[in-house]
Image 1 (cartoon, rainbow, N blue to C red):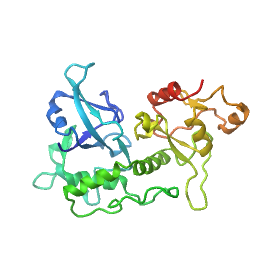
Image 2 (cartoon, rainbow, N blue to C red):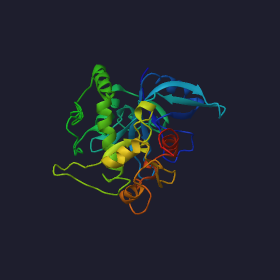
Image 3 (spheres, one colour):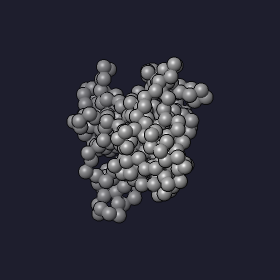
Image 4 (cartoon, rainbow, N blue to C red):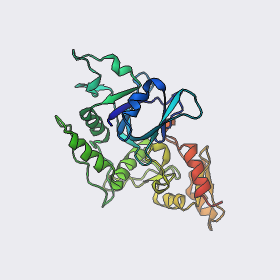
Length: 299
């Protein structure tokens, strides 16, 4: 087992769904199998417009042949392990490249940086995760939310393998993951409720909006922005109870079981559609919206 980097483009030609599976050709089979049971970091190349750099982490559960594409394989992601970074991490910064393993003996970027799948050292993994999840300008949490994650505010010089495992164990906490998920979703939506369109900030500087999972975590919903919505308290309550839902084009649907249809319509912004994030890849995915309509929304 070992850490790794998987390259994924938002405009990928491969049948990827980062929170669920990663498709790859046979030439990378050995490297991917070396990551089974361990954690990988997703990276989007610099040549992609508005690249996210290193943008998420996940754990590889197993590798299987792709039944739909001869010669291709799928790395299946362990349910509940995927986590978007709150801060996309660029390939390089003021102190040089973040992933030191791509440097050759002369300190220059080697051909390894072009590999779609490559091994990642424990120290590089910890450095990337630390930068991806640090909270320089945190969105204030509710009382009782998790405290800031240890070791994420500033980079340490060296990390022991045990320290990496401690961090992973900490990031497996549901309370911690909810905190990170809230941060990433609210950033995507500009801290604005997708249903009402309101952006309310309280006296403490906290956005009065929640991060709702479209497909709940307890139903194998992943912590990916495209499975999230920024919702005010009332809208969140109605969405979770199936009193409102969304079509694939984000039209707000009102259940026939709502006893005060006019008041609910007045709550919805005047477009009648949920406001989406600016980036297309962060929009609610039809796969999750369909699940909500079929298993939660009350027709």
